[in-house]
Length: 412
Image (cartoon, rainbow, N blue to C red):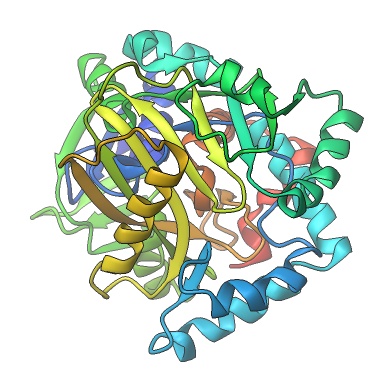
């Protein structure tokens, strides 16, 4: 007998999809090679950011990339040994930075991000995760006039879209977060933002709630998915498991299951890093994003986490010690009174597409395989919308017109 739905991947996207489907009364099996939340979801910065309005590839980036590439402490670094393999993806990424294509992708970003708290509300209640979600706003801070000048386009865009923001200067920033360095000259407060103070714990709660409501969780590595007339055979579990439908939420590893079907998506790992230190004194009230350094400081349940930057070096290279050292340096600059005591550190793989939009929807050739991967830097925020869209599609609903930006057919 076929299982109704197999969800491959137990990160935040797979866990949210499984929970939403379980809540709808579907029979669900979640499969991952590691425990829930132990891959990219383990180490993310925790931001919940409904006003994000632009993809990574924009017309402005053309002026900035040369400086980033030559700066070993810049927000984007490429391992030159990996460059030949990364080059096709990088060229597609540059193409997406044209004004027309970036504007089109921005509509998709806004569709995915705008209702993050509303989309998460039933999942938070289902998993009893209310204490992990903090609707406390967010600060963007700038230590240079030039950095703040680059933000003016985003400020104007948020204003045009009617999104709440408050522009701050000097001491107004310290009034929000007294521990911050006085080096920051400019700031923007975004009251609709928030954060999750334990992303891994949130994923675990979603999966545990699903299992308590009748789903199954299997820790195994899926080796192959085989569409057929009676469903999709899922291999790698000892004996194959027959599913009516499969949700592929395997992040950057999703192509390993797509290639045997004759297709693959342009996915590249933009490796993210974090360091986390136990609290000393009072915690931050909200997360703080240093725009020039592309680094986010977030108050987590277990300490203060600094996360950010992007490194393109593939899936197999060891963590880059210089990136950890850079985060320690940035932490000291942001919070001069912070004693850098021993804590944890992490490197993980953000699954990035050239246009910054995930693949959400049925595989063009195999309609009973639904894609839900490629969320890049915004997996935690984007998972809520994704789970709603996936549940709607698997219930037989037609995709809304605004969802066309996420169509897997654009790549597969």
